[in-house]
Length: 456
Image (tube, rainbow, N blue to C red; front, side):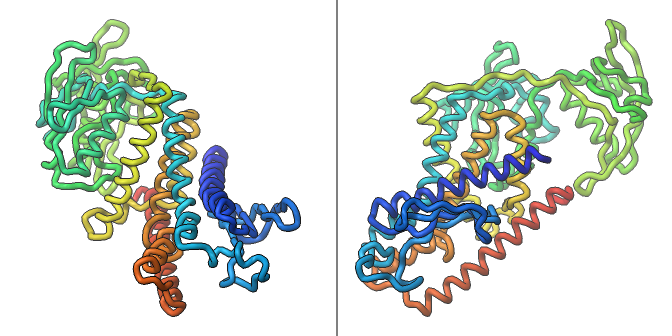
């Protein structure tokens, strides 16, 4: 819990400071007087001013954002000798540059963070697949347990190497969003028996990207041997006599391909509401042992599934994904661009009803992911920070009043018509923007709570 809170606060601090520093730095470069640079809102906890005419740097009590306050005639009287330093007296191009600098700073930070994560390197599961789910797109494509995906292609001529399971999931996500099939170059997990398969992703009939996407495709966890791990006392596995280290060979006379195959059979054992008994054959210390096990039935996401209260599977094989200076930087630019486009696509599809509003996440989900990524290592946390920085940069560019994109929309109107938006319309648009933002925040917070309660 402490790690989650600290990681979340660090995430907010970094992203807010970078965003506001973008506004501040360009404002100063344009000759605008900056009165206050605040991290957070509300009561001031700490402040410092450089010189009597300098900017006041402030840390405030509520850490959910920040602001840069500039000299402006619309917010109070300005001395005649300082009129040339007022924001509202600047040219249209300068005002637009100052406003756009905040989101631009977040996107630039994302590029550097993605590149940094590649330079540092992360340990990720190798793209060796477990048995695909029955009747799924992956199963129909001919994928089997132990298949190692080496490369992917959209057109069969330009191939992209797949370095890890995370790479593969990203490529599948992009193909689903674009409504295209994805060709896979696969071998067995030792590198032999190369063949080419095609995932018919348009067959899914969806372009929605959420936590269940890989399951819809038919891909689950990376390949793992069907070996029993920790056995909880008094659970079904312990009562049946299973022990840690037992290798499961067969269930009800059918061979077990891998750990995911075994987990799926256990889940399906309670499909009719009551878990049915299962006959397991395991290998223990070179001997074969038969055991009868009855999973317990539990409720999950509105359906009954079986559980045996034991950890199943050996750790997946990991690879270190690390890139050089220029390749890492190129990938940082590419990933920032792809994520920006992905964010806009998802927002557009939510707007027209093609994607669910459940995809919106709020501070609770961000805090949870911040904690998880921090526990996985610095490379994962940097990648998470980059992801949130992209989201913050893109969302702030949306043409909504109260956001930077809303102000840019006003300047576009001014540039096209030669006159600024009237005070009457500014007030109306501001009120409308506040209402939209409050609605979005409410939906995001509801989704956060629903996820925590297991309702999504």
